[in-house]
Length: 198
Image 1 (spheres, rainbow, N blue to C red):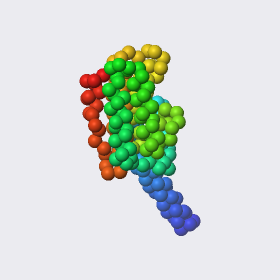
Image 2: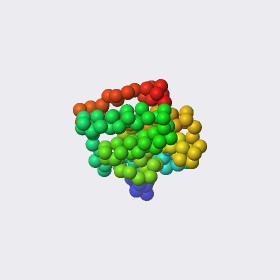
Image 3: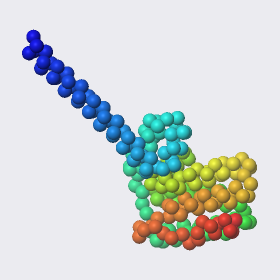
Image 4: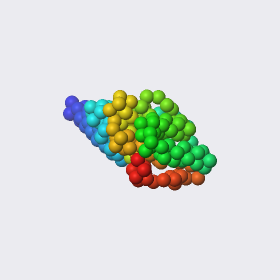
């Protein structure tokens, strides 16, 4: 009887060790995944955890964003396209003093046009921001801030200083997306110039 129970004890012991090893491997994998997502998304990771009410939901959402953006065909701009967008931005920016309300609306439209030209699908704002956050996580907060001010502006609640801030935020995203096939395009005017002019 002892001879029969000994092999079963060994089998049970091996199964327990295997289950423990598998559990530890799974925990380590989840931690690596969490760390990778935190590194990739930066502050957007924490914002998503807060917005969705937990780490598991947030990480699922962030992984879904990555998969969605992987399926997109994002393209860089030609030098001519980048120059056209830069000229459009400079023209828009020069009108701020005379028409701050109109410029904010135009800045939003120009950023959307640039996103579309690069290959980002246009849909609801949260999806657009989510798509941007995959490759541009440090700038998505500026996009969210600009959009929040634009919504306040649409309701007639934003003052001129807020409108100026919206233009600065839109410019940050605009500069980030103004990437050419030959590398990142230098902006014609730095972001600080908006603050001075506005």
